[in-house]
Image (cartoon, rainbow, N blue to C red):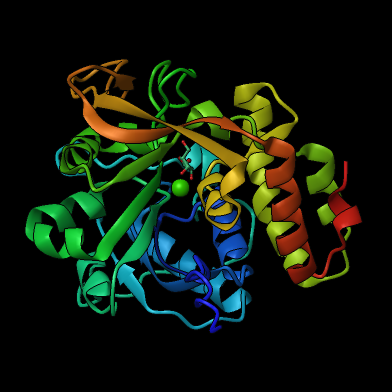
Length: 322
Ligand code: BDR
Ligand code: CA
């Protein structure tokens, strides 16, 4: 008897990444580009950790170092309504800490937007956002039908529903940057999944691991070490920990190994008032329907990350093993 065809595989998963590199964005992009389960179709770059010009230059450098060529798009340069603020203290002037990068300053005005990148796809894709949600909000405002047709799933590193904030006592950086954009995206109910500080704060790369990376023979490892030691200094100073929280790695890892995160359906709202609660994401019966990541398996996630990214850096897993 003829056998039924095997179920269609989830992998390779067609993926578009919206990012603002950013040191943890850099790690997340390296993980995505080192993972055969993900078919990265393009990267849209936005302001956030640094200016859009620096973030674009950083993306080009990361993709080059990963040995890939990819369509890149330019998303938002500034929030919808709020003043532009970048994370100089966390990610440094260039956005990549002490890592050496070429000069930026390319004219970006005629580059394609996130929605054009979406339009060029031959079918629905997963969209992962690792920075402020402005580019997606703009795409939704300008071409809602296109976004709905193309975005089968949206997974965002943004917000926190229980954990304290990292920008104010209540707010996570990406949500704080542009709460109006978060509001637009939540109301669209795409479907969106929020991977916030509740889970990302539990995924750490230690000071000792970063230190060992600096002694690895390959230039790529030392380059990343230069980025990470800046990030580590920030965490030592501001968070009082000898480790870095690698937020943006978490949603990428969850696309590769879904069992690293557990999600719950929730209704979530974002605070639009100025002040300490600006950008706070909270559970509210009148909020939008989303799925929220509520628990994480940090060891599994770290193992995946180290196994994939360290060999690419020319470092062995022992370099960073605890
Ligand atoms: C988020 O803000 C940025 O600093 C990181 O890149 C991450 O996307 C964490 O709050
Ligand atoms: Ca980011």
